[in-house]
Length: 105
Image 1 (spheres, rainbow, N blue to C red):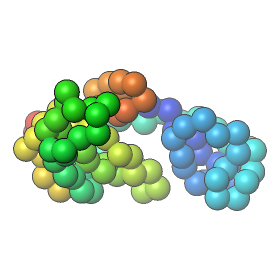
Image 2 (cartoon, rainbow, N blue to C red; image 1 turned 180 degrees about the vertical axis):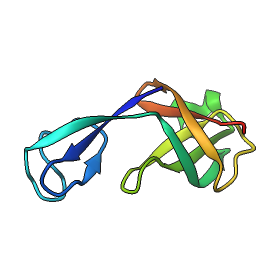
Image 3 (tube, one colour; image 1 turned 30 degrees about the vertical axis):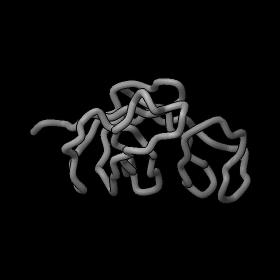
């Protein structure tokens, strides 16, 4: 699944989300680039004691995923056996959350 990444034309900073200006240099000159949604697991944890809103999902895995040099996303993993360094792919965006699954080599 492709995701849109904004890249500042002035300082090349990258971000995901609705911002009308660069969060680093405040320039309003930016372009949208497409990411293939593939990244590398930086860190992960399994949530057992979830907030009320997410109790029906517990236990679930949260992973920090490096999408580019500058973009690290908090995601929910479909695969509990992920490890740091694994390659993952964004499979969907559900209720504002990025859902990833391990890419098998």
